[in-house]
Image 1: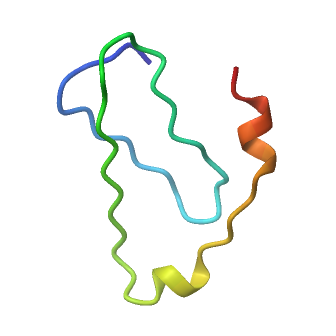
Image 2: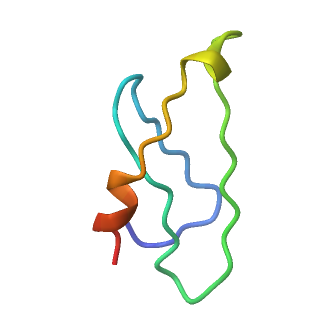
Image 3: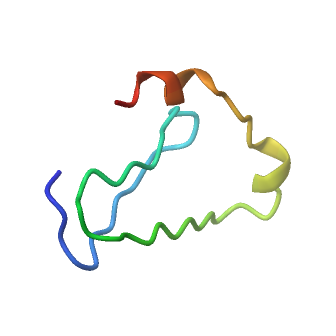
Length: 53
């Protein structure tokens, strides 16, 4: 996706994902969850990072 100010991207639960800024401009990634126990259910997976150029 090309960089656009105030873009919202929904990632469904259980979908592995990586936040990447491919723009030459700085970016801020804000993560919000609507589940109070989300922190306990997060699984860190280093595998997707290896696929990001």
